[in-house]
Length: 93
Image: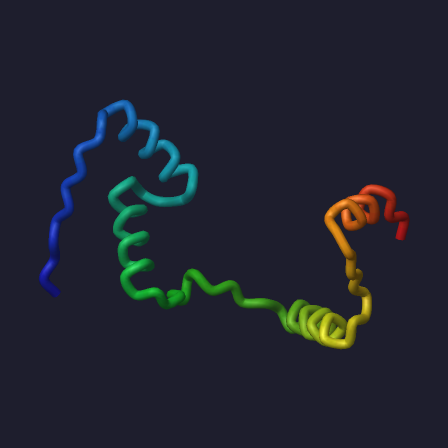
């Protein structure tokens, strides 16, 4: 595969902060982070490490939630934002 090098002028103070943040996020470096970002946006496909595998229990739970929503069970409808906020603030389920 032919590779292209991207050069981005950035003040050194910004680069130091970016390196720290990139490592806090689990990347080896800013270059690693940018490489993964460019690969991600260029393919627009989830990669294996981007997909979270749910447990059977979680899948069952989400299936029930989806069915409840389709059937209008355990859902609420509001005429306006004020009514929704009032419900959220004073709900004592």
